[in-house]
Amino acid sequence: MAKTTILKTSLEVLYYSGASQALRPIFGGLGAIFMLHHVRPGGGHQMGFAPNSGLEVTPEFLDSVISFVKLRGYDFVSLDEAVQRIRGSNPEKKPFVVFTLDDAYRDNLVHARPVFRKHHCPFTIFACSAIQDGTCELWWRGLEAVIAGNTKVRAEIGSLKARFDTVSDMQKKAAWLQLYWPVRQLEQKQQRIWIKEFCDTNRVNLRAICRAEAMTWDELREISSDPLCTIGAHTINHYAVAQLSEADATYELVESGRRIAAELGKVPKYFAYPYGDAASASSRDFKLAADAGYEAAVTTRKGLIFSGHKDHLTALPRLSLSGGFQKLRYVDVLLSGSAFALWNGFRQLNVA
Ligand SMILES: [Zn+2]
Image (cartoon, rainbow, N blue to C red; front, side, top):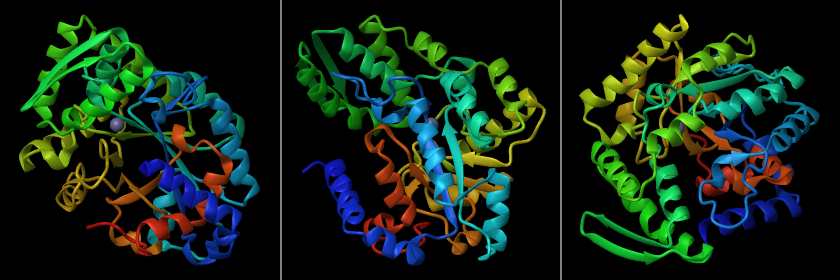
């Protein structure tokens, strides 16, 4: 059984058995930080070969999540307010939710902001300098574009030499599954050289993909002028910082903050680690983020926020509202904390 199928099955069981409601007081914690990337019509529901659809939700789904958590009695708060609550962890207060969006895609401005404004809901966008410059190699998009646009694909990654027929959607998916992790796990700078060559060979314009997807700095200035919006940093080059030397990781952390301060006139207080899983953001990086002056930083480790996180503010977990989990009952179970308790072996903190 695929991993997502197992995760979804456990969510269904927890929901329909009523266990999630029973366990909410024990595992519900102080609140949750939601993670989004793209918000756009069709998001996550494309048919056929759409391997990155897990990064997308529809504006309607975002709207329904906000209405739902409001009904459940959660406070929508800014990251500033959330951090204050974690520091003080006032048990009298209602649980909170924070909405965060990584990479600063244009659809955040076009499709997500109207929904947040409708509900007067604060949100944080983590901007990545090279993405806003329109020069970042969004390798997962380039890989998708090459496979989508060709009926045969050749790839050489280290010792892997592969040729794929990519006529049908099923063949395209198979090629994607074979290539995604080998590319993701390449040394970070090598990965960008590889994807540039791969896209050039297959006549895919990687820069054009970035420019089409990303907010420009002007657009980021526009959205950041909204009082509901907080801008955080997300590195210069969207590298997995744990894979870099300490000097290179420090550069990515510090310079991305400086660049945002120079562009927007405001020093960012928060940071999100690209990819954000344990292999991409390690305990060394949690310390580097604090040393770089960030008050808090978010990972993609799965979990809710507990008072114990006050000592680990640069290693906060998040709850992904990804395409694959676009059902309110999943959100309900995830917010109860029961699923994370199960997946994390009943640990509240996963910060090592
Ligand atoms: Zn990112």
